[in-house]
Amino acid sequence: MAGENVMTVDVNELPLPRLTQIKQELDTQVEIFGSSLQQLKIAQKKYGDSKECVERMQNMKEGNSLLVPLTDSVSLFILD
Image 1 (tube, helix red, strand yellow):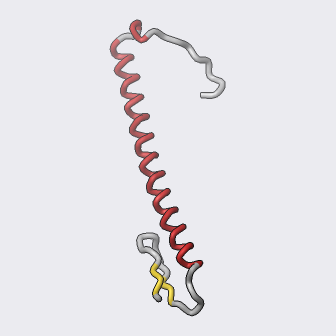
Image 2: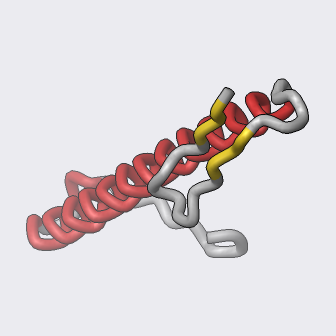
């Protein structure tokens, strides 16, 4: 996009097939943006969960038991 020449076109002058193509391209871009937003929200939640676990660990007393998950599908458990 950077460095491209921009040309203004009156949409009333475009043929219907070209307008249909533009609509399909925009619909595809909206889908991609929606999917990206959803992935970012998932990453944000995982980050928040990780932050919460680190905060819990900072409050632990030495000698407490700690279960650490082997996969990211399990939360961190602190046993008192």
